[in-house]
Length: 170
Image (cartoon, rainbow, N blue to C red; front, top):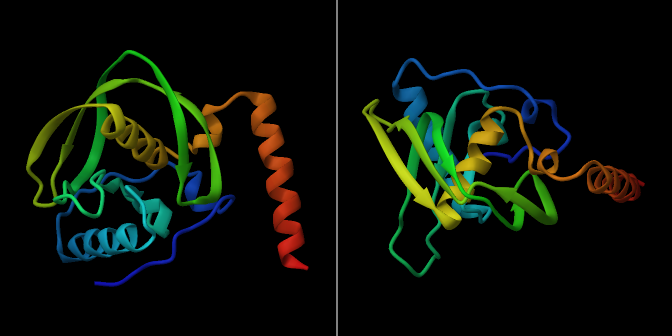
């Protein structure tokens, strides 16, 4: 296993729609293992393949705290099949470090996906798990959390981000 570099905004790979997985081969298993290790090292509660530069529909999620028993979920080709309710909460992203913002998402979702062996499953989620699923599936579709906020707030983010990263390059 190995820790991979997490791609940061505005890298192009974060904006493209990822490709479905067709082969559940050794390369896929290595990618999944590396993503798990990278997510825990970051530390984060979710990671999509394009966040490590691979344009495939793969994501890993673990919303447990480090003290609790792991609740690791691997999702291949995930798809939201239903969503209910609405809740706003503070959200961050490993690809946009040191930035959090209020994001409105569905409070409950049903997701269908394949596990790492290619077996189909469905998951009903609410609260933090529902939020993490939506966040990671957004990544797989080239959508970042800044795309889920208002135009003025997004423009403020871009200006601040550009200014901060301009200073760090000098």
